[in-house]
Image (cartoon, rainbow, N blue to C red):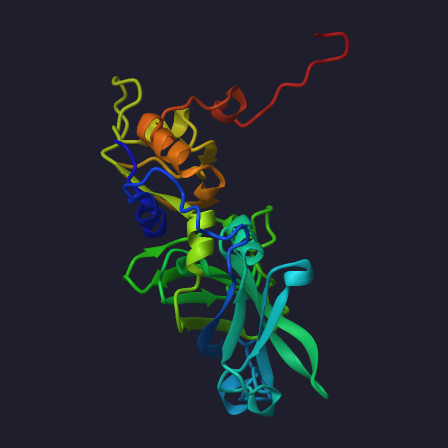
Length: 345
């Protein structure tokens, strides 16, 4: 019944030391370092469905026979905020003279790590038009790139994005992969830390549909050792819940999970650990329900002896809510709300 949960390797390693005390030799402000991230982009522009050709014109627009819409563009990666904000121009195969670098020499400081954790690993990656004389032009689209795997020791990662036809919200993260072959999906808005900040900006209406794959490789462990020990980033991922019962009252003749869907709210999980509480999105009723919902926080903000004690004594509390009754308005089969007449209470 209980959903599978994953703890980040970084936290497990940091908590496995037999000593119950922090290393007093650690500096008050952990040393920063520069991590060089090498980027490789596969960018494809797909033609939207063209209108039917006019009677006197047997041809229709074909994006393949015209100039590539990404020609002369480049990517801009933005991380951090305030005095620690960093921005990097990154080229792809259609950039031409607009950009020549495919690497980002990122200064990894305690402030940057806190910023990434606050945004659940997401940072903005924008495709930008060349504005001339070294200036940046208009943003074609932007996506939320998940750098969280680097917080937990991975040296390579890959993410894929695709824009949807008109009426969608533009590029959305489909899946991100770590060097170990694991993968996880980001919930809607999860990357932004504050609501929808991490969702990115869709392409202009009427433009091409985009498909983007980003591969990133770090030349050394992303987190400096002192920052890793001091902040100790930790992640809990709710993967799935299996073996959920199919009946609600036990007397219904309806198909499995139909009565549950009619009478109960969608399935969600609530977990608590180390003062953190997280509630997943609701999912349709079924025998097995998947979330891939991840929450990152800093376990190092409490002393190591206290951290170990709380993990031993409190552990992680997980609640699976698969039969919370819907409100009266939700279960009204006609979807009508009665409005009181004048003078009625």
